[in-house]
Image 1 (cartoon, rainbow, N blue to C red):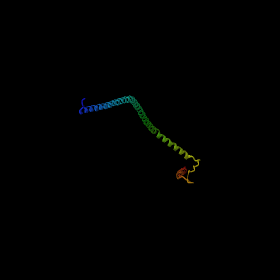
Image 2 (tube, rainbow, N blue to C red):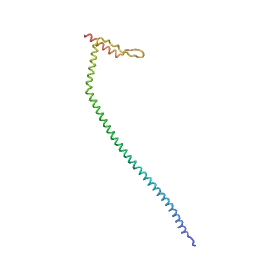
Image 3 (cartoon, one colour):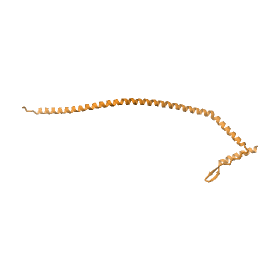
Image 4 (tube, rainbow, N blue to C red):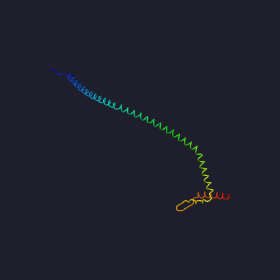
Length: 159
């Protein structure tokens, strides 16, 4: 038998280490392949679920847009009705406001004239204000009554 030289032993050791290294790399590549297969399957599943979700989201956005368009149309109609009502109110106020004020003033004047001509009606007692247990005549009422009496007295003197 022949003796094995140092170079041959080194070659055998290098070959064994290369075989071990290749084995580890093969195992790592096999695991990487499994991970890539699992990732590919996961991406395919997510895609299968995401496409219908995106379609539903697109439908929901279209529906929301149509509802917003409807609300916008309703809001513009309400704004138009409001401006029409304001214009109508202004027209009614300008058409009937002046004459109604004149009729009311005329009615008030007629009532005052009729009340002033009544002779048999007794004068009303002045209203009084109660302040902390005391009754005090209202100063405004007294001034009005004094004015009314002086007018009535002047009118009586002229007749």
